[in-house]
Length: 457
Image (cartoon, rainbow, N blue to C red; front, side):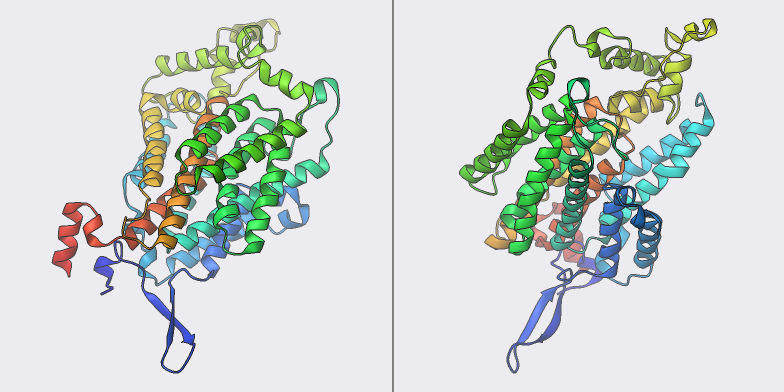
């Protein structure tokens, strides 16, 4: 029997749609159809992650990011569904998100430039964290997770398609993509890598031929755009995702996942230029600028670790890593002699957080990502679920894990600690875990929780 007391662990209630024949009731799950809240959240994914309003000026004129975000908040507050109550997503990941947000606030007073930190925390990150939690809470079931994943895939496909159509590759030093609309080439590569597993999922499990065809086209477009970025960090992230899919994507036969992975590899090989492979060959080179130049990644990472150790509790403050480079680095004194110094970004999300939020902030950030990976991994359906639902939930949990792995690896080379990209993926992982628990029988959950449910019944 369905009741609010058992709503978090029992299958969602069925709704009556109509009659197939006299006396026959056609039932559908509570998330069988799109509703206005999911439309707004999908729109927010397209704007917050896909930046479609910056790709098309006519879209940006109506401020869609603000409209979809505010509309989603209002719709959620007045939504009567028990499945959407926030207490269903209160768990390790959301608690760590709250703790990370609060710690960022505590780091503001001691920041090198408090205004920089205030602008990031209250002008951007609080909204990002709020939308992450709201998105997870708004999920009614597995279909809603699929809708969010499809919006994420569409965002990456559209961005990749626009880049291919509007930016030509040059020769010599200009052989790869340069300045884009919002993401730089390296950021875009990681974004595309996180979306590729979702394309893989919809090719195999899409609900309808059009969805599968769109996913196939999207995967091709993203792969071509990915090659044009010439990103070495993205290349490493792609290898990590491919290895996970081949070795751990157990929901479909090995032959199929090897075939799709090989198809992506063939597109990379077929579209990559000589300069691309020369660029990839410098990953382990001792003469690469990332090792030898003071503005290369390894020297920056070393200085970033130094900022963290010099300010172990609160760091240099959110959004202040470039300020630390310009004021605290060994090269900062040059400025008094009129010699310019680059105020570099961290080029590593973990060092970025450690330097800006201290050791405690870094621990919270890493634990937050780890808990999201655990949530995605534990979103496996119970053994006695029907084969169709079980396979779909198993596949979705595994591709979300793959997408998070793509971000985890790509973030080693990029400053993406506060990006919507990460928190949207985490929201889907939390929502997937919630949807799986909602469909599980009491016997499949933790003993203490199962006992409470039996008493409630």
